[in-house]
Length: 230
Image (cartoon, rainbow, N blue to C red):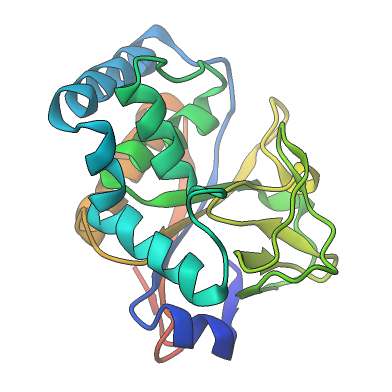
């Protein structure tokens, strides 16, 4: 587990932020038909439940957008990943079928409304992650996006640099077929799905689809800096 430090910038912009940290030993095989069917069922639920203009009103998404604005970022140009995926679904474009860990993260993200970072824990340097606002000096290569301007985005940094934002994660620490140690960060800027329900869904998916073991969970509260282990 990583120690998470919240900057004063983040505390001011998102005083209600809670982060669920989940670590696990697991496999990252191609997505099974069983998992993909679960994803398609959730996509159908979202497509039938929301109009495109309602997506950014979901509590988890709306609160993330407010944090972006408070930090000086336009959430219509740099959408939280949960919003971007739900917009694809409602527009009839669906999601890409990738690997088990990535697709588990995507499933939980669209179901909960939370942007979720997924990282190869072995590629993260140091025992501390700091969550702060990005700057124009940051170099950040978004997965599949190339250089990304993260100034004003909430960004997790290890001792080398940025590893993840609610819009995109970084190439350096991304999940691959060789990943065996997962670090997942669920960013709850405003609560939609309950914390315990979210944790339960993640653990169930990891155990059923990714052969997960040694799952550990902690909850980090931005306002107080408190960490609770589960």
